[in-house]
Image 1 (tube, rainbow, N blue to C red):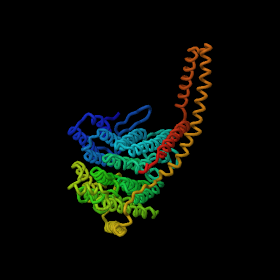
Image 2: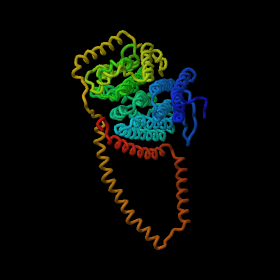
Image 3: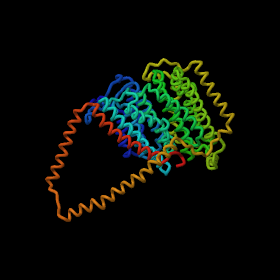
Image 4: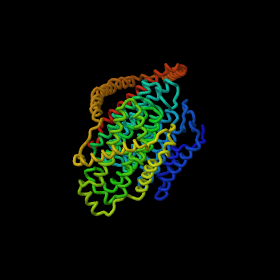
Length: 609
């Protein structure tokens, strides 16, 4: 085992164990110390580590496990993950709920575990820890909506994890290797199952409803962490294992448009932002599918920028919810008078996600769009450009207008505005937002700071006259359309049906099978055991019949001997034969995944449930 390297993920995971024993100022200092140390260590890795080096390697039950693979892609994501964890920790300093801090640390640590994983089995372990830790951030909100959303979130991610595990088992049986890297056997079952496990976490439709269901129900601080890690970890593993996979171009482009369209219908501010996570991750997924150096650099850069500006947007919306207790756009408005700092910081995130020049989204999203422009499929470039306009329309115009300037707020919100001179959130929340805002501006003004970290050499200049004028024309035209049609864009109290509608319909069949033939079969077997078999045993006992213990011992020894002989034969079998056994195990896992998904989606999604 190599121990000359400190694993940043384990620093968070082990550090979480001390949080419950600390109080007040000591705990606040500790909550900042761990992410700060991790960030400094990752920064040092940018300069000291050899590209492609591996650390923390050891064998377990015959598997070669690699906890620390270091290269430019892993350090890029580790850098932004540790940065966002520090920002999120500052934002949540006022929080007294110990469980949330522990869950957040486990969440960040497991995400870093995925980023540095050098083999599929290590990746899977951290993948599942990440799912359970993030689910707690939903449950911690308490209340029936949060509980239901948390249960659905867990069931969906467990089903995705089972698909991933099935794919890993088949992949290992077919190749004899568990190294985490590009999966080249396109079209195989392992290829498809692992891809499904990954794209579920990326919230690719039709597997997206878990995100927009759970994120709005999470705690104010928990949603900030959730917006940063799960989907971007999925982007990382797609970059690592599926570059150039053509189907991802189709899926990513559809995502970009899909999220924007659904944002039109939303009244809940965090649900609207959640749909724009789907849309923005679509750019990254499309970039992975395009597979060129420019596209992969663009997907990596956009993931980096997105974590910062989306975290800032969720922090701004969270500050409003924290101070007013309202999250519906129909209940808000006029807050610019009492929350000017929050408004200013939110708008920096809004113009960043909208790809305004001099802000981070402009220098990252443009790389993906430029890569799509060189692709022979013109519709990819067209749809990604249209989705960018839709992003500005809803995140940069609709949401801030109705949240901070609109006049259709509720009576209670109006009373708060009139009686309070200031509704700015606690200073730690403003400081966290300010740090994220400065980073959004810094990346936009000095893009080479980001470009030098990307996995491939960068030959791209974002600030060309054509690109600047083209982007500004689209954005200004979008703004003009918004104000011309403002009366028709007023938010309404509606419930949007997403792809979960189909899952709920399909789950009725599963539930019918469970409640009828399966339940009846179980009842028949139980009745047979209770009435016939038990009576037979009781009769035998009454007649004084008995079985020599030596006979039982002989049976057990015989079975054990048979199992050992089978094991010896399996050990010497060719990989092709062993793959049939792995296939059987994998199919069982997939069946479990389908049942979990059916139950999870059958419970229903959406704000109305």
